[in-house]
Amino acid sequence: MKKKIIIGLSLFTLIFFLATVYIIFNIETTTSRLDNLIKLHQVEILREHLLIHISRVQSALKAEEKDHKAIITTINNMGKVADACFSCHHDESVKSKLVDLRNHIQEYKESVTSALITGNKLIATPVKIDHAFSIGEDLIIEVNNMITMTSNRLDEKTRLALRKIADTKSTLYIILALGPVLAAVLSLIFIKAVTSPLSTILEATRRLKAGDLDYRVQALKDEFGELAESFNEMAGALKQQLLNIQRTEQLRVCGEIATGLAHEIKNPLAGIKVSMEVLSEDSNLSKDDKDVLSQVIGEVRRIEALLKGLLNFAKPPVPQFTPTNVNNIIDICMTFSVRVPSGASSNNSREIAVVKNFDKDIPMIMADQMQLQQVFLNLILNAVDAMPNGGILTINTSPLDETSIIIEVSDTGRGINQDVITKVFQPFFTTKTKGTGMGLAITRRIVEEHGGFISMKSFLDKGTTFRIVLPISRDGGEDAGEE
Image 1 (tube, rainbow, N blue to C red):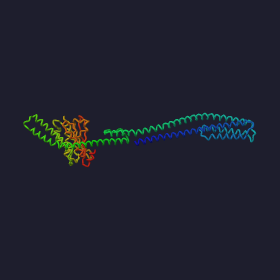
Image 2 (cartoon, one colour):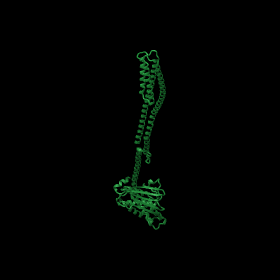
Image 3 (cartoon, rainbow, N blue to C red):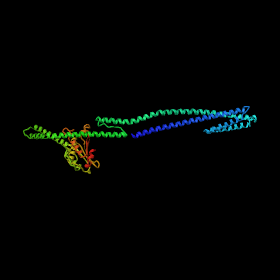
Image 4 (cartoon, rainbow, N blue to C red):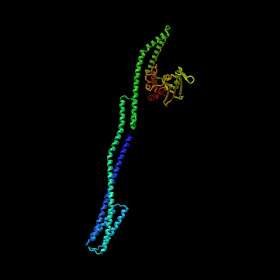
């Protein structure tokens, strides 16, 4: 945004500078045209004065009593007027005509002077006077022709100059009128460029304040884009903190429930189970009654398993960290959950092919072996249960970076609906008809206590993949957990 503002201000300054230069240039050009017109009119006046002087001399030559001094003075003034014409700038053709005119005036001056003597009397013969008068008439015709020619050109130049001055004036008016409009348009553009992103961010803060933690700011650029990115990160962090608070509250409630259940239900439940087992051994009972008692005993054991899982989740044992090879732990879990004969495995008449992509050079990690065994066993059993008609179970292990390793458990089973995929790690949530809903909750807690994290991807009828990242050493555990 800062860059755009600088570019915009630079553009505005450049336009203002160019307009100023244009105005100054036009003022100078117009002034120059007016000066040129004034000089041309001055030349026109000089030529008319020259014509007047020639006419006076001609009149004096025809007079009976001639004023010698007046004629000589007028003749000298004619020379001065002719010389004044050379002070202005002319092209070569005009200069040539001026030279001819000056020569013609000099001839006229010499002819008049030769016709006069000292004093007021005319000694020369009438022939010399007529000759001088004839030269004067020719000179009058020449000056008249020059005045006529220059007058026509002067009128044309005057019209052209006035038209250009009018055009310049119109252009200046347009520039003066467009200046405020351009400034207003640029101001609106800059204001919109600033206020529009601010309005978007303000709307986002209102949505966030209203509790919509999933709202994100999109399509902002420059500094506002960075601000939007920070806002989105803040919204994500707030949502994560809220989820952590909810989860902490769930753990607290689970702990209280588990403690109450342990004291109020466990002992009576044990008595009920023992009584049912004793009754089921009575030989006088019919087969149907024994089946009913067996079902009751099974449900009692299921309740005991739920209580045990709840206690383990609410008050898990402290991990005992020792150097651990993850590949060995997974192999042990496979022997308990899936039997693999001849490259293919079977479990309850289900053909499940097992693919193990283990990195043989995977580093040892600091972990509680029994708790990791519980994690992998839980994930593998879930994968087997998700493939009732058989499928492929794939387990990958490899280093993620210098501080962590990654374990992936994938199946080609039923998958999980996207609507409930965010709830799978919550306590008591299950998609199984006889599940307790504590397995994945306990798994997640164990992974996080080891400084790692677990995530999953699932698609209906395509399968599910669980991804676990564990730190290699306890020093990197906190960082991994934060990630």
